[in-house]
Length: 505
Image (cartoon, helix red, strand yellow):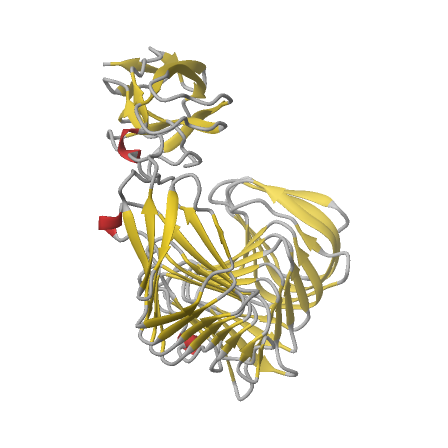
């Protein structure tokens, strides 16, 4: 076939023959299926639409440099069979099921590949190139496996991550393990991503390149790392990279944040950028030293009593040089009198050659035993009030919601920032709320001043329920603010979803 259209309205069409196909468009309705399970040569571009499934479930398919999968979500699945030759995915591909599918050629990904369930992608002299715009995501506990032939190779220049599954996704094999070449980002935010095959970025204990993130998950590498020349990020209370437990030197970027903690078991030297983000803690069992070209960064994301700021604890001497940088996080702003002990040590030598980010709110106090950041200014306090109801409207119809924002104290709020409106089942702003409109605020707001804002919104098709309309001033947290809890307010009453209209009750 050459560039034709296949329309599947119901049931299953099974394509299990041989031959050559030069592209095509597949229209597959919900609950319908188009199943490839033969031996064919595929060239050209394959795309489609619908809520059914286009699946490669078996057989052998040979591609070339023109062969491209460009399917929208959630149409295209690879559940079995073998890909050989060259294929490129520019849309969304799902690797689904508990079985094994084989790659004996090259798969280039500049789109999104979701590796669901516990199935295996097995390499028979295969190469996976995850390009700079590509995303390969283990949403379950699937795995890579070397099967036969030359060693499997994964070149990651984009994002390779594990975002789902509480178990392990690994790089395993039969004698030889799949090799990873990471010049992009490897991230785990659930379970364990076990890179137990060779890693070209680890050279004699030095991590040489790439970005490696453990965000409330475990990233397991195949060798101990004592020197970092790459980018390392520990985030969340369970973020862990066991291979860096003996890390002694940072030449690259090392970030610890959002409840993560790291203990250096011996002396530690920072010759790069060390960032202790809000809620991040580093403990050094020995001396700490920082070179003249290095930078030590601390982030403050809440009141000093809440512990949401970065800390460095050194049991020995702190030898200081280079730069100190302070930044505010999570939209937080301090109040005069707040004090943050961000570093402690048994003794100190040297001092920072440059300090940035302190003004206009802070000064630093570098003593023989501690580094303390003191607040000498109070930030703005944006407060939302008088949220109007747009009245009844049809689903999909545009409407305008009005509200008032006042800067209660501190200093002038510096524009620009964004105000947003959400649909919410309660009066608390959280991740479950649905964004329905936003508006930019172009002008500064003096202390004691107010503005009357308005946001054009469209209510989407959502489940029948009663909802509040919730207004959030500075929804992106661009303005330092002493009290984020009064940055949002809701309509006084809920709105009810009915068949064709919303009405206030």
